[in-house]
Picture 1 (cartoon, rainbow, N blue to C red):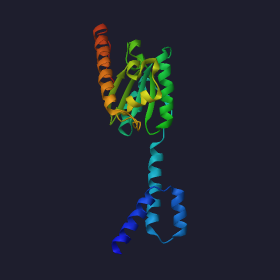
Picture 2: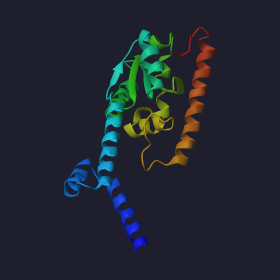
Picture 3: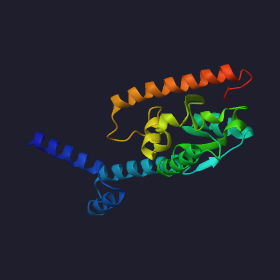
Length: 211
């Protein structure tokens, strides 16, 4: 009997973990003296409050170079920051901005920003945009150069998300093929490295340091 009672209690607790706040309220009304339900309700409310504090962005904001340290480097100590280096007249940049706007609304705890490329880095070549910088813990985590890393003009919200997910900026898609992503990541990194190496050879005065 004792074992059966313990098992029943365990099943009850597991069931409570999956209930919404409204469902917990209903149970609390029925069983006012059940401390377990009250504790789960308190825990759920705390989780919702903490998530609400994180979900404070929701859009792609344009910044200028003087804002970079505060809006990117410093802000990344509290959350992931994704920065799009872009040029308005380049089609791939327009497409990237559209996809980032969707992701920004979906993942409001990640800060999405954009900055005109040669305002961020003097003489930054147009052929390297769109470029995405990923910051976290106060430091740069990734520098993804060029549209090819996202599928070129065939890029989708999903392909951009998958790239950002590799660095923790957004959650990965549930059915993402990890092994395939690793292969793509290696290819894209090689392409990005080659592009940057070419730029350094062609433009020795190009200051490529980020803050």
